[in-house]
Image (cartoon, rainbow, N blue to C red; front, side, top):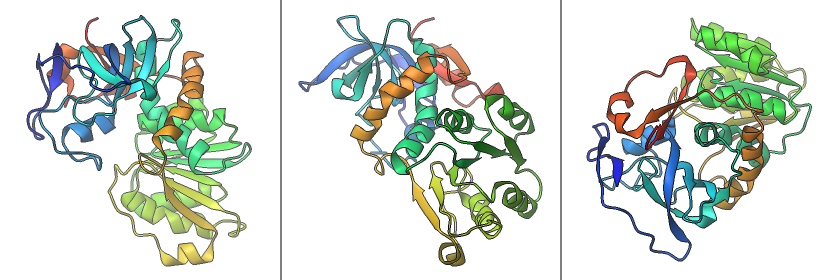
Length: 321
């Protein structure tokens, strides 16, 4: 079969012939891959930097996809194997990590949306007791996952969603996705943190895709301006594109009802993720989330791997178009 293959962690995948994989467990089956999303999580998998990396090479990147079972059933699946993924014509999947799709489901949209949407969906439904009417800040709302988080927060009943990010064009697009207000993080970092404090002091939840210095600087300005510091603020750390560490001021934890927690593999069980798949798939299939998918032939993987992605599109690799 043809596949995208990583031979060294400092090089792009090569499109080449790879030995056809074979199922080995009683719940495994070989599927035809129809679409697989090119997520940031896949980049860290392919360069060996993700915390789940086994450093095993050669590696086929790709962590999820839409495929067709031998009996014709369409499924969305996540791969259990950390080094033989979904960027290939075929993939071995564990049926326990798959959910059936209806024939009217769009494989491209499902493959593009599930991973970025799942982060905030699971965070709000599995990590905290999120209630309709609560207010929410999305830190890093101009990325694909952040844009999904804005939409999902509204779908789940948030009374106010504030989107914060650096990209001015994407910030301008957030109200159309459901954002009630936006905050620019461009310019002087301290001034940006103060803007967040002014705009988001009354939120109940922060969905944080940035972490690092932006999160570190924003905590106290937000907390100190709250009208009631005893009202809980849950800060959910999901991504760390601005840095892997952030110093949490001790006074933030003592002077306010401030909860810092994470959401991701390990903090939520595999069973917990799987339980959320059907409802999220229904939302995507029903067209309730705006999906900016861009299908690309898998044979072009080497050419597009490091190319900038324009207009916030999510690349989806397909074996054939």
